[in-house]
Image (tube, rainbow, N blue to C red; front, side, top):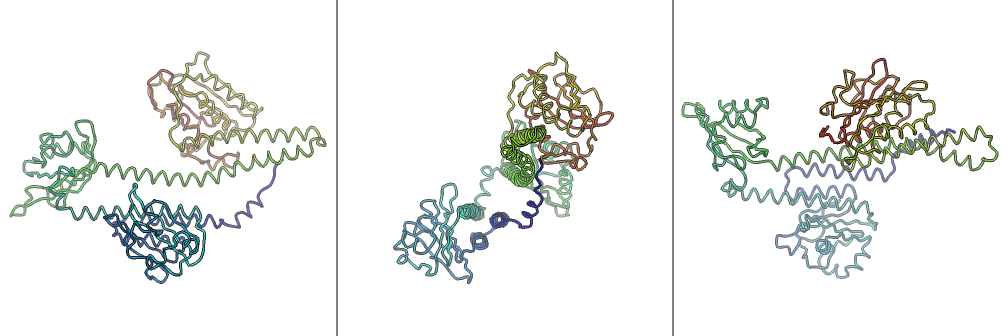
Amino acid sequence: MPLHTGAMTDANEQRGPAPDDVAECRRWTSLLELTGALAEPLTPEEIARHVLGAAFDVLGAGRSTVSVAEPDGRSLRLLATRSPDESSAGWATIPLDGNVPAAVAVRTGQMVVHASAVDRAREFPGLAQAGRPDPVAEASAAVPMVLEGHPVGVLLLSWDTERQISDVERAFLRMLAAQAAQALERARLLAAVSDRDERLQLALAASRTWLWEMDIATERLEWMPEAGPGPGVVAATLATAREWLALIDPAGGGGIRDAYTAALRGTAPLDVEVKMDLPDGTGRWFAAYGRAISDEAGRPVRVVGSARDITERKFAELEQDRRLATRTESARLREAFVAVVSHELRTPITTIFGGTRVLASRWRTMDGEARDTLLADVADEADRLYRLTEDIIVLTRAEHGPLDAGDEPVHVGRALNRALVGLRARQPGALIEVAIPADLPVVRGDETYLEHVLRNLMDNAAKYGGPGTTVCVSAEVGDPAEPGAEADLGAGPGADMLVIRVEDQGPGINEAEAEELFGLFYRSATVAGSAPGAGIGLFVCRRLVEAMGGSIIGGNRHGGGAVFTVRLPLHGSDTES
């Protein structure tokens, strides 16, 4: 018994986003902009101004300050202030042993918040005599800036009116203070490096920096220290420039040789980042810089330069890129998840809720045919909801890390029979052909995973094939018999793999979308309107198959329709996908 919800949906869309959503978006946008701003090399004062600007823009604090801990750890020094009239606020120096909100927040590492001046005076009765308090401040917050347990400073905010600071706003302030602490520590480290640059030049070995000089005529290299770049590499290993190039650019396609040639000619300095695979089996990244030195006639005769180990920086950059990509993808998936799943959940829940209410109120007065039809609708939607929930559970587990399929023997026939029982119950009119040898060997993995994969693939085949068409399921050991897309699975020797195919007689798939079909929430425009779906099933299939060490692809079968081919390693084999 379908229920129409279009009008309600239109009304919700016309109302627009909720105020809380707008505020949340504003907070995250401010944090992202602040992250970008603090990524630049800034002075402590510039960092403080950026942080105060973010706090002012998001929370509208009338007066705000940033104070930093002095090196002796006894007091806080005012670094920057911000207020509507740009007037000074707070104290220039705050003793850390004093009984004031800023000192207490730094000592305890906990935020000190007051909704009004009365609340603040009640907790700190001696505050008015301790210095020069702001006479118009009502609500206030002292947010400690702490890095790895060490106090960096404090962010002080005040408002001209009484207000409660919500948990969400407190979380925002904590993140703001954390970013400020990290940025101030980076600025301190950069200043320290600048001050000690001359002494660091005398400690090349400790800083993993090597100086080198090359005679252009002989191409011989001399290193200082003599061990050359990288642990375990002696000077003789990289005695010539040719040996050096062979180590860092064996294929000659990375542009390094062109840069080297330009340096030899004196037309441009050598400035490259290279990865060296060292003889001890380790790989290290180095930033190599060099410049040609010419004789009196202007001819380049030697090249001098340095090689600095930047492995940790490279790993940090790669990790930062990975985390950024993960955060971006997670945000995208969350938005898509809410949009898709809320829509997919609404239909079965609405049918179940409405149907059961009708049955409860009219059970005795309904004729048998109408009652059976309504019960069938409720059962179908309950089954749909159950299968969607199972996919969502797998999706959630996969988002938190790799799935563990174990290494148990799994009989394909048994998993298939269980999946077929459910399919025949859901679609009694589906025609199914099964071609599985009785002596089929077992695969390694998880029977529940395999049943889930087969159920999703067969449901799709029946759904997109349409009434009166046949779903064909087959399995065999070795490489697929048909040429084409199946041959690209490449998961090791064919004799160690079991090949399962699920074929339908539907419209087939667009070959250009064969890989995209396995993306989360992806649905092909050519079939999306012909059958309902969330775009989760094939994504879940691939995750489960890969967890069992196998692979899955989609293609078109001879004679029309789609075929999805799964390859799984046999139990006891050493094949890895």
